[in-house]
Length: 102
Image (tube, rainbow, N blue to C red; front, side):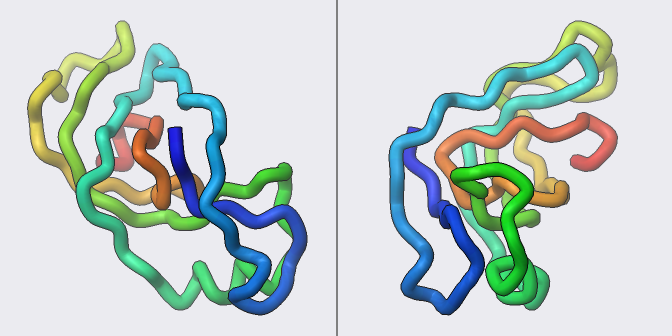
């Protein structure tokens, strides 16, 4: 899948659009087909610090449609529209987050 990523902290020029592996949907997670993202102040702050992994997928807020739900998730369903928040990864085609954060 495609995602906005960076490998090292720095100015906007460190950002790149890259192919990264699809995320997996854990037992307590949902997998979102991202349709809209939000650029937050924290995204700018995070870009100035060292990523915890490389490549670091930008973003922590987005909205989209659920395409998969984990086996322990009982209150979400495939096809449902959601908004979500997590510490990184929203600026991608697909985003796996804990269901409780949708």
